Amino acid sequence: MLDIKIKKSLPEFRLDVSFSVEHEILAIVGPSGCGKTMTLKCIAGLFPPDEGLIALNKKVLFDSRTGINLASRQREVGFVFQNYALFPHMNVFDNVAFGIHQLNQFGNKVIRERVSNLMHKMHLGKYEKRYPGQLSGGQQQRVAIARALVTEPQVLLLDEPFSALDSIVKESLQDELLDLQKYFAGHVILVTHNLAEAYKLSSRIAVYDAGRILQWDDKKAIIDQPANAGVARLTGVKNLFNGVIEEAGSTYTLINIAELRGLFRAESKSSVKFIKGQQVGVGIRSDHIKLTEESGKNTVPVQVKKIVDEISGNTYHFSAVAANGLETKLEAKIPHRQMEKINIGASCYLHLPPNNLVIMSR
Image (cartoon, rainbow, N blue to C red; front, side, top):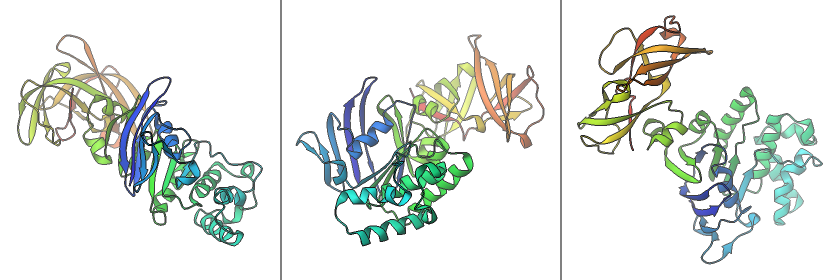
């Protein structure tokens, strides 16, 4: 297990995070400049935390109390940088072999066998004499991953590894990363801005904001039950409202949402217990909202304000009139096959399914 509990003062905020990683892929998501990459650099030994503890399978890598701070090469950590950081004057073979040469533990025959075997697994065998400038972005990324793995680390750190790649190459490399778990049994931490990417590749997700972890949980729990409005926003929930609990049953909760001028029923999915009169946050994802022709339970009358045409459907921007007379904005993503043509300015109803409404503490 990789255990991290660190603090570090940065110009914009103070990084203060605590989490652990099993033999899995943990994704760290959050806005730019929230401390994601700095966390990786602290684990790798590139920057020391101000205080805290980093331990790998009970081996202490950093401990501010005892003064332990192992050098990067002693930590059994592989790091894939966002810009790949390949050496332009070295060919592919020498780039991959660079890390293992630095260990000064193996002869040339062992190095040749290990590098060649890994290059074969990464589909790089025929490129060993080429230089980074002669490779595509996807090929360069494979070289960077191979270089990080050749020392047989216990931890693999990936800093937005797919951000500069086109969609086809990105999808191919994502699939290869999943396959990598067949022969890499260590701990993987993936930093990404892309929630869909994090969900596809990881088993757990840590949501960062301003140097803190807002939620660290199983990926399905992050999506289905965000801990608060901050996590909801950072994981793509566009429709967020304030509400008051009117009734809290064992299998359902009834919420008064003044912004939508009505009572809305939500299925109880969280272990958190709510009480009558409690103020809560309520959210629903854009692709869970349904268009309906008439008023009914869990519906709200709206007017179409904007339509964005997309490949698989349209994104509709609606407004509803709140109890105080102000407008409340809603967004819904409706697939082409599920919708009729609705024009800007048209009035209709939206259905907010009870099983898709999320209740959050405020």
